Image: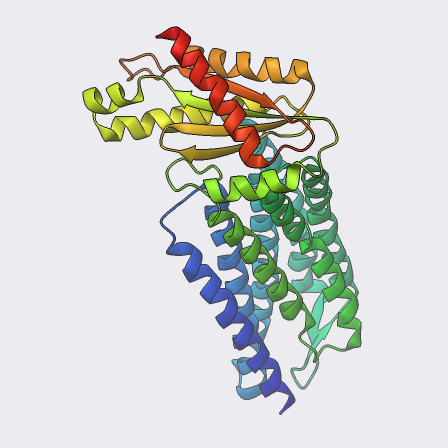
Length: 376
């Protein structure tokens, strides 16, 4: 009965993670973090299923095939765990929104580091130092298993620390929560390894990892419902919630920028709505690049139509630099296939005690209107 319960737990965890994989695969959006998250779910789904089938083969199968199939499935179990940890590292790097160059460099180092974890698995064919089967074909872990788990913990922990530090500078509460939830993964590996000493018949590793998968999905899903589908920045509902939080928790001066695309109607009328959408995406790209230099990453939201909000916590000099940077990046980053000059007008408001989020937005909008009126 014990092996049946063991297999049932692995099957249940496989179903849960399989559902997470299917749900993320069916999403309309396909950003890099979402694709990497699907890879995490996919590899750990393979990992869980491998051990499920191992349990069935090892406990129910008889004859000459029992030992070689058991050995092959258990080896594949550890291989898929390595790939799963590598997929998590890729996801952890992607959610930090690092540059493509840094992402590739980091993942090259991780790939080399994880390749080293194959050493005890390969050596196990001759030494049995990681796991072995006794005369009754019963599976036993060996000393190298502990080093294997600690090594995977160490590799993933290096990303967890970076995620925690990144969360400390993140202004968006939803993203900050998602970063912290993702950073728990190495602790799940460590907890699973510690609980393994309870006994080999207790499937603690799969349960710990499945719980973390649920945390990661919840964090990613919470971010998704707060995003604008076209531009993939925060939507208006999330903006108001964020400003309500920020007016009570900022440490430096707080600024709101209302960014409006100039002559957007003419772009739509002349080049079509598809090109209008491309223009909005170009503006968001410029806003994101302008936000990179700041220690506390500014918050970006689509307020509606061709209007965007940027929330910055910093100094007056930071606010001036933000306005200048947005205009310069738009001017210098014109797409080769764009036959028009993309420009924006920017209104700014600084928080004064007693102001509500709507007051700040209204003040920024008023300055924006005045800028446009003078131009006309």
